[in-house]
Length: 150
Image (cartoon, rainbow, N blue to C red):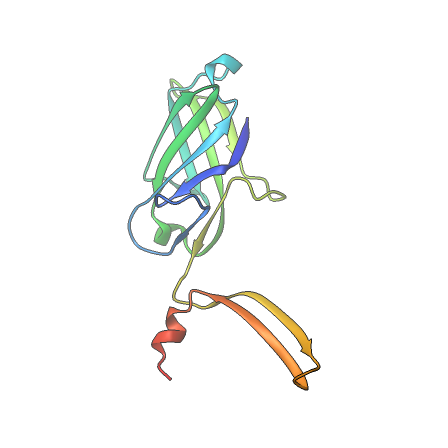
């Protein structure tokens, strides 16, 4: 069984992060080779996001893969990178247990606090013609900077 990294959808957008908020964050992803044709039939899935049990979860077989849908509360999980753990069950017995690897980006979900600016890029560049140095900053989640007035 393998994670399909490109299949992750959070809040209806193809991405592996969601903003911090209280409420439900719907998500879905594909697990390759989790299907009855590979000897892994299942009729229930349990999803944990950073150790917190998802509010709801379901799975369906499609073309030899499993499409797993779930929802979780980002506020309950907290800000940061969180590993996913998905247990596929057949009549209550675990037939597959899929966990995120610390050495891979697959199977991880990030909860971001958008009220705090995040420095996305920093690129100093020499500018000999102007007699100085230019610094290019890339900032995301800058609402707090804009609302600070100035």
